Amino acid sequence: MVVKVFSAVLLALTFLAAPANAAELRPVTGFGSNPGALQMFEYVPDGLAAGQPVVVALHGCTQDASYSHNAGWTGLADSLKFTLVLPQQTTGNNINKCFNWFQASGSNEAESIAQMARRAIADTNADPRRVYVTGLSAGGAMTSVMLAKYPDLFAGGGVVAGIPYGCAAAIFEAFTCMNPGLNLTPQQWGDKVRAASSTVVRPGVSIWHGTADYTVAPANLRESSEQWTNVGARVETRTIQGMGHGQPVAPGCGRAGPYILDVGVCAAAEIARFWGIQ
Image 1 (spheres, rainbow, N blue to C red):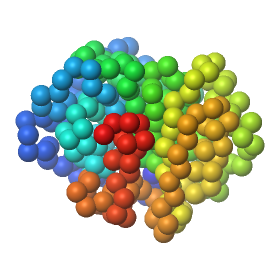
Image 2: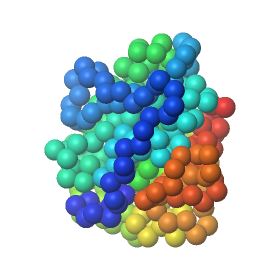
Image 3: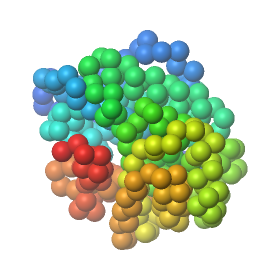
């Protein structure tokens, strides 16, 4: 969804070198049955104590686990001391490495992501009450899936240039959801979430969008906000004037590049603050 599916809009990101300390992104295998056939990467800061949070960060199309460096999440993990889980899509699942949020197969991928989060909790003796999920574009849409289907696993979410849960069930519907977006009533959107899980207490969600996003229409921010407000979640919305399609970063937060946009605001830091990680 950072690109229209099967259309190359994003450039692949260069895998940046790990931070100067000894911690690095490491592949993890054997984290569960992995029905979605995803790859797992984990970043554990040096000297991480037990009982710290876990953040799952989901990349956009054509990107990979190195998204965490560019978006500022790796630096935050070091400074705020939490474990990062970086699910990575494969071309075998989607030619552009988009998470399949819009298909029934997305449910398998969602279960793989949930298994990764549980593995990270076990790996680092993390606090299971402080597990969060965020993502950009296709990763943002998959974040909505995770919040809807696994509200007992995640304490909060961050949707950046994403899509409401249940907007599409097939690829042709995904295009409409992206632009111009689907206009439903808050009740209709909320019913989709309630159908995914009967849990009453819903994770809070921070929703971000640029006003000049022509890939995923800014109307999706309004629709997502209506959805999560209708099910009783705590909702924060952040609109960045003049910003196109991408993850907001700032000097000292991540590294600007294709669809990682220096607009003087660090979305990662602001989302972490919304969750109470500071």
